[in-house]
Length: 194
Length: 194
Image (cartoon, rainbow over all chains, first blue to last red):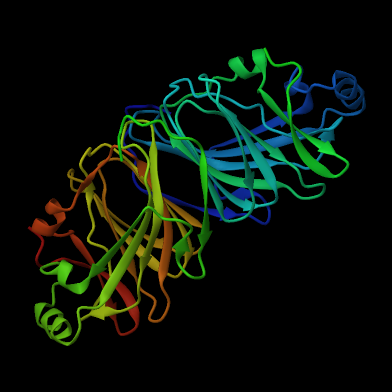
């Protein structure tokens, strides 16, 4: 979108039962193959991928000029499933402009947001319907669906000029993993964290 | 809040049935007396105020450092009622940093957002549950509850450094009014617009 273009007010409808927004400008589909190296159990990852390159999560966005002061919003749907003991999850990212926040409003499902900042702090917060999660500037974040059967659906918004830095997480991972321990999610140290 | 202070991720719960969020940092209550000069029917305004200085709307906020990149969020509750033919409504404001947007997610009720920008454009958008309204930078905005009995409840977010300019609207009003025309909301020119 032309960043100089002035836009008018607009609305869109959130269909949280079906995990959709009306008239999205973009629809991003992330498949298992795009998460290579992100799961600690590489054997399970490769076995799953050999069978099917399934969809882990989807993102719908409404585009606005990517300039300071505007806000980009959309919906994230993480499908249910596991790779070994780890749950289906998003790639996870810092913002390119590190000091920019992000807001998540959970409308369906049950999950966690795994977060950390370059200063060495980490945090894991639970996502259930009608919980708003605030991710301050400087905090990388990844959402995880811990429900066996239901999608995790959130509406998000962040400063439109923030940008995404996926590479840092792809290279070093998160300090903490959330794994399934006989039906209960457990937070453990990431053995592969660099 | 100390704008230099670094904050950690946090969550809060939205109780849209009762129009509350958990552990708000601020609770703003706007009474009829604070809206002097904002309603076109001054006679009705004064007659109502003589009887009771009733509450028109309430706002709950979660505070974050008021710096670029962070996002301020909260809940707005506009109660049902009318002053003459005009509905209960918020004061309406530009942002002090004019080029900053605001996002409203309607969770309950039925209303309108009246908007205009300094370039002379205006817009009125309907608010019903699960509608997200995007107010771009430069657009003043005022929410109006058109339901006779139910609160209009929205969750909002805007850049934490945006600030509020209420004075411009208090001085000149909005170009358009929404008035009750025998049970149907009607958009009319504001005779008092300067």
